[in-house]
Every structure is written in C-alpha cells, then in structure tokens.
Picture 1 (tube, helix red, strand yellow):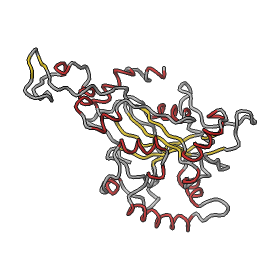
Picture 2 (cartoon, one colour; picture 1 turned 90 degrees about the horizontal axis):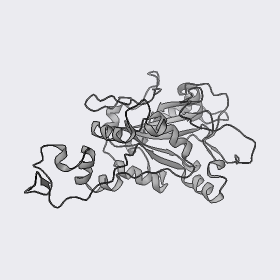
Picture 3 (tube, one colour; picture 1 turned 180 degrees about the horizontal axis):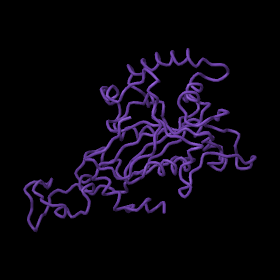
Length: 314
C-alpha cells in the first residue's frame, strides 16, 4: 500500500501494517483503485457512519465484479469444511498471528453479570498488543476519497458485547442493527462567520474575501486552517469540529486514536452489524485513514501539543 504524505511531512507516522504477500495474485493495485471515480466525499462517508447505514459503503461495481471472480478462486483453494473459505484464507494466508479457534466480532451472550471473559480493549500505557491484534490493508478496499486508505484491524478477541452499553436492551438492539462507528482526529475548530468585508491595517479591502492579505495576522487568526474554514465551502464548514462516537464504541475509539495519532490523522472507523458482515467468524473492524495536510497538523499541534503522545493521552 502506497504511503500518503504531503510535502514530505512525516510527522506522526501511522501504525505498522501487514501487507498482502506478493504470492497472493489478482489483488488490485493502488493505481487501479485510483483510476475509478470517487463515489463519496469525506463528509458523505461521515454521514453514512453517523446514520448507521453502513451497507451504503461499497466498491466501484466493476471492482466488485472483479472481487467476486477472485473470490471464486479463493473458494476453490480454501474450500469450506465447516468454516467459510474467507476465514480459511485469512487464517492460513493473511493473519500474522496463529488463531487456533475463530472468535466472532459479536458476543451476544456476554453481559456485565456473565462469567468474565476477555474482549478487545486498549490502554494507552500498554499500547497495541500484537499478539492479539493486527492491522492489515483491506485487500479489496471500498471506494474512498483520494489519499484515504481502507484498513482492517483484526482481533483474536470479540469486539462487541452487551456490557459496552451496560446491558441496555434498546442500545444493544441498535448496535445489532447498525453496528458501531466513530471519528478520531477531528480538530475542534468551528468555522467563523464569513466576513462581509475585511479590514487590514485599518483599511477596508475592495473585496470581502481578503485577497489582498499578505500575512496570517491580517485575518486576525493564528491558524491557516481556521482561516480556510472561514472561507470554505458548505461541506467543509458543516463537518468542521464535529465529533462522533456511537454508544458502545469507546474501546475501538481508544484503539484507533492510539494507532493513528490524532495530530497526523483523521480516521473514520466502523464495525459492520452482523447482517452485512462478510467474515462474521473472525473479529475485526474497519478504518478509513486520512493523512492530514501540514496545515492541519500544525493546527492539531496547537490543540494536542508536540510531545510523544497527544496531551489528552498523557
């Protein structure tokens, strides 16, 4: 998977990612994926995740047909004997850790009062346990905006269980129907009102968009991102500063923030509901990772500092 950086700004690199082996034939290249039209903007992807209508996330249809044909070959090679061929392929050909028994994403029997068992958790001090979890490229990613990468975090432990929502039956029903989702790395800036006129050095510019400015302070701001939000279009302004984590998503949210530093990345993550999971027997969740621009990273450092970890994780 090609790495995304802008102007060689490598601050806050992403996690170690397990790429597919060159021996696995037929997978699409990034150039092939980028040659298709974009089906969703970043803001539209956020709308889908907040709405819980995750079935709207998809590949370009020609790529889906190619995937279906490729899966026919996987079925022939990893034919099912009690387990799905997708599980066999992942366990034998892709996952970097041995998995003696399949663990599903959902544990519908696990409650706050049931016999304690281990689930996906993330503690900043302990970090990412590679004996239990692994970040893999999605070999057949969904259609996402340019510069965004689709990855999956695979887990040897179940992710979703009733105790995440204190056994609340209504919340659990919602999770079973819609899954989980969230955003990380959203810079908490809200756009200022677009000016009707701009004053610089005591004079009024002939145009309200401030085209005559010669320095950042002319906009009475200390962040170029804040200035761009002031003048940006509808979608940029609509989603600026908007945070989201679905109820029950707190552990996945912490893990994504730990893997993709909020200063360098904005991520959308989701756990598909059981009704649309293609590999229900192997625990995993999805991440759309968008590398921030240098301007955004500068703004993020104003909020979260420049230390080894963001200030809210220290």
